[in-house]
Length: 220
Image 1 (cartoon, rainbow, N blue to C red):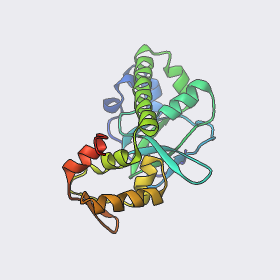
Image 2 (image 1 turned 120 degrees about the vertical axis):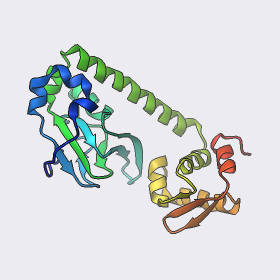
Image 3 (image 1 turned 90 degrees about the horizontal axis):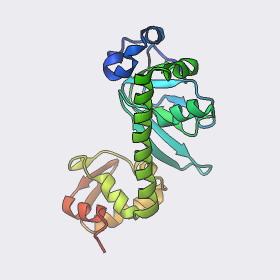
């Protein structure tokens, strides 16, 4: 994980109260701030520690040999990175990559301190609880990929952002784990059906109810 500029973080214990029983460990943590787009870790790298996000956001994804990317989840302040914790638990290389989506401040709990912290019951229960929650998120993602039609998933991705969504076809393809050409073809179909109106890096929602019906898999 790359170290960038130092900054004064939000209160670490407010976001991660399970660390309250480990004052000596907390005193050794040093926050760092990275700009948007910074690659924090890569697939197949050894895990350098347990990230504690204080502000900003980290997108965790996997990539294929053909360049396609599948977003697994995002880590917000107070949340846990499943890939990092799994690597530390199993002493194995990382299985995904992490990129800061905005300016992000975080601390990195080194592997040896992570293992020592697991001896504290509060921290251990916290990590295992978040581990289970992240696994549930990934199970939902697998179910969506395996069983939902891509047009339903795309319709769902367009909802919940207001009447205008500022994004690119490539960004939507990355989010859905497919290729840009398929997303573009579907969006043009949506436009012909009167569901959306397309412009450069912008999608105007014209028929929210129709998109919701499609997202629910009820359209023919």
